[in-house]
Amino acid sequence: MAVEFFPVSRIRRLFDKLLRRLGIGGRDGLSPASAVESAYARWAPVYDWVFTAPLIAGQRAAAREANRHAGELVEVGVGTGLSLPLYDPSLSITGIDLSKPMLARARDRIRRKKLKNVAALRAMDASQMDFQDARFDIATVMYVVSVVPDPAAVLKELERVVRPGGTVIIVNHFASERGVLAAIERFLARFAENLGWDPLFPREKVLANTSMVLESESRHGPFGLFTMMVFRR
Ligand SMILES: C[S@@+](CC[C@H](N)C(=O)[O-])C[C@H]1O[C@@H](n2cnc3c(N)ncnc32)[C@H](O)[C@@H]1O
Image (cartoon, rainbow, N blue to C red; front, side):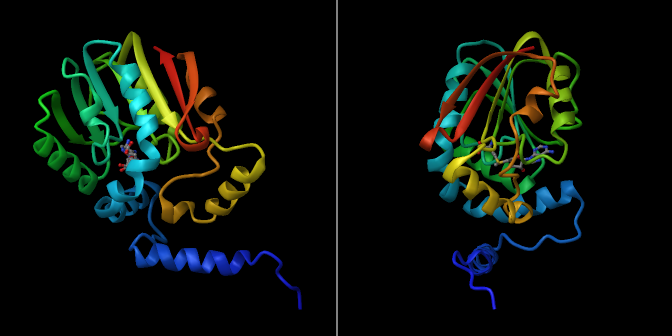
């Protein structure tokens, strides 16, 4: 009998059990979009509790960058609206998300924080946005490109809805090439379906699918886990 020095299968079973306890596991047989909706319906009640601390640095960096510009901003995959209070009051913000339970939390936040600069929150698929061409001056897309079933379609839509000369800000974790992080990502990738994102998402998947000009790239958050890319449309 082979002895497992590092009990991967045992850890995997325990992790799976934990996700199911949290109500986050088990979405077999769903289409990719329904699977995302199902995952985030389950994440919505605990999302802020679990993700505020790890994600805030990237959200702050993106909002800081967005606040250097003026006009209409679309936040794609706005989720529970964690970043909404970070935008300058002079910007007019539209948030979209596929998940209605996540949007309901964002609405609560707008009410609680009395935010006046959020013009609309809409349930919408980022790969088929219901906006006219060049409608926005700025787009922010935080922790979303590795979640959507078709990132190339989302990038194409971003190019369409942001005006020429406008700004597109993408924040995400991209796959590490080596080291401890790469090992953790490979482990987490086994749960990609249940987690609702792809821990092995490569940064090339963004760069190869856009003709926008990459103006800057910087690292944020714990251990520089998250990358912010700023594009000129
Ligand atoms: C990891 S959360 C990030 C939420 C938020 N941007 C933040 O920083 O906390 C990913 C969000 O993307 C949304 N999402 C996934 N696929 C989508 C799609 N095709 N169109 C719009 N939103 C989508 C999910 O519902 C979820 O709210």
